[in-house]
Image (cartoon, rainbow over all chains, first blue to last red; front, side, top):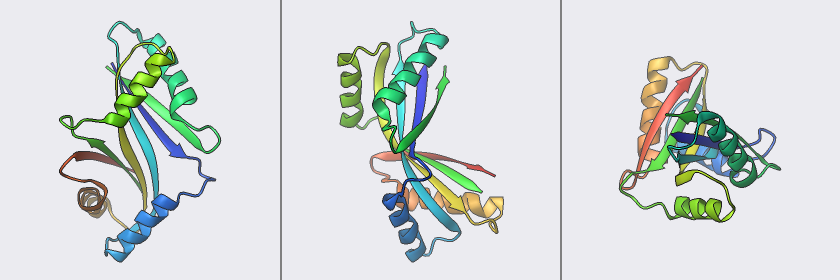
Length: 81
Length: 81
């Protein structure tokens, strides 16, 4: 089973990296992009022995406690067989 | 419209950052994670004026030419209204 964890800055937090990309795109003549936010993305390969419920709990715990800084970031995740 | 672009290292490329996270998780007693790969994740807010076909072409071009290093990375993306 694989878990995909997406970590992004909270809406209220400035994202200078995203802003830099957005202004670079504009200078490079790419059209139609109003805003860019950058985040992180983790692919966790889980042991086959784990059942779906345990995997859900464990991945949620890992995402919350290790992969995310709760002060400025938030996360979503999904599991896939 | 929003575009979500996911950039990951190619399978054949070592991911020391992911390996570090994986061994850290092991040391911290989290169970059941065999492998971790880290990637980048971009949320592009597109102008409302763009139609779906143009948006698809433009986001694909931005992902390929700007957001991804084609030597070591690959990308996927999806559009959402």
